[in-house]
Image 1: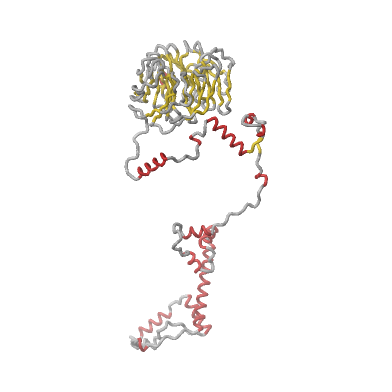
Image 2: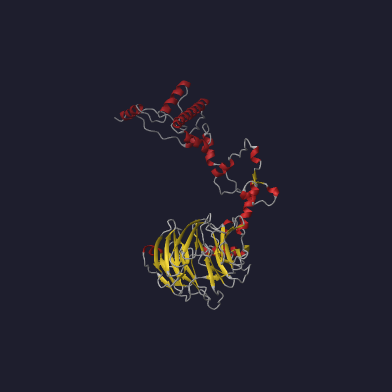
Length: 573
């Protein structure tokens, strides 16, 4: 029984399937006549005593073992042939796999790994990457460094057109706009670059220098350095940087008294108009001294840009157009309307408007969209003109005399205050009266104003009361009730102005000194710190205006001074 067990095991092992590689090696051995390769240091089983019926013998001690024999040349050739066959199989398998890959993937592999079809060792060396030297900057990865080194050089253009290098000349004589920009007869033609410089000079001359919004570079001053250090110090500490509200607080208005707007052109004549330019950092000052002056606003010196003198023309009102390209001016005892073109530098008098039978043209309003010009006539007439052509479109008639008028924020309606205390609302397109109501408590009106956001209408009367209405109630109700009646003035309210953000309403009376107040909206309360009673430098106020982003507030008095204040709540001009 013991001798049969090993025989069965040998019979079972002879039926096992030989692996393909070993079978291939056996065929090669048979062809070359070499014996099968055994591991060194091993003997056949029959020599070791592992045959049938023999107990296994112990191996000889290491001192008695013979060193293994060196492989013969035939065995080396067999190993080389087997390695070559294995490499050929791997290559065939790789080709089979690459046939199923899309072209994009094969292209990507070639870009990343290179052409390493026949050399896998090269692929491994490329993946490991070159060794980085100790003195080199290790900020970039090895792949990025290799990519930078392999970046192709910039190619030169194949062909250059000589006509592109020739400078094209622009005709200046045959164009009415360019002809005015010629300095002498030799400039009948200018290159495009020179024309561009000339247009830039004309614009800066009209604007009084480079506006703040057009500056590309900002000079760094010591104050800038200090502010940057403060910001750095601020960012190094923790805290709550989120403000609770961006709206204007009530009670006290933080403001600073600046240099007079017309300090570089002093006058003793009454200031009749003060207005900020809608697009540039410029303020206009006009008065009874027959001059309209433009100043650059910086809050320190306010340098003068230009002055336009109108002979025997004491200015009753001057106003910018909606786009800021023109200045319109009227006088006390004249029907002429002067228009000053700021871009061309020309003064254009409009002596007569066809269909307009007014002997004196004094009070007027410009629509916010720049399309219309409204002239307040005598006997209750309101004349609507086209702003572009200065031609009469139509007229509207109210009862009594026209005390004041203004456009709505969308330029579609006109609000007119009459001498008998009534307010009329007109539609601009149809020139029909939409509503008519009595200003509460008013004997006769003196001023009227609308807010930029279309929410409020303010009416000033002869008794010093300012009624603030909701615009919707003025359009729909025949007897609207005011939201609030401001009673801080005791003489007739002659000037009303809303700031652009509709957070401040400025009210003033020219009948009394220091009669000016700033009203907070929507609380309708007066700021307690303006004006400063102890200084008494404001005197009689005849005109007021806010800058486009409420950063500055200016007013003109009868002493010829255009006072200007900086409102710290608003960061921009």
